[in-house]
Length: 190
Image (cartoon, rainbow, N blue to C red; front, top):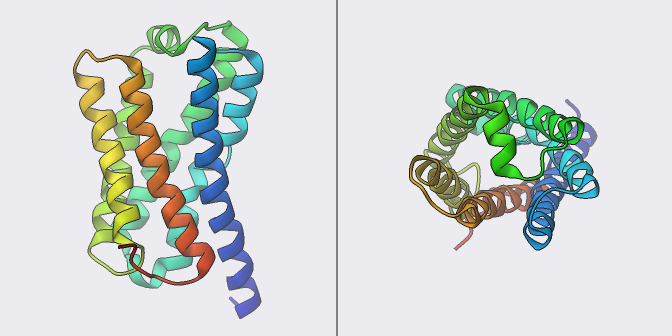
């Protein structure tokens, strides 16, 4: 790749890694303020989910000389799970699911299996990234902590707002990684 192509990839990946998780958090806030899904909120959620399967893969592409094959495997697994989650947003629109709990009940084990794949892929990516200086450690730790929160809260009965908080922490980590990619450095966030 030429330097111009590298810069363009860095800008696209960094911008997407900031914008998509931020929009995802906005849609979660809209869902909570309304007490469930709305068509507008679900369409915004779909817009947020469209780039999500590619975020870790894009971050890997920008930092591939440092991250290694485990990060690539994690990025691919995470991306495959988010491809499914984008589909579930369209399903919720079509089926008229009133809220997240109803959607989860309707989709059953397939939703849970993809959630497990997302967590496993994300944690594999985070583990690989923490072994290098390719990304800010704080951002990677936030991403991993959010995934672990989501996993733990899926295993125990807890209010859905806690799952949303785990997602917000995970998304904050993605935003931090996106910012680092956009800035072009592998600076550690203190």
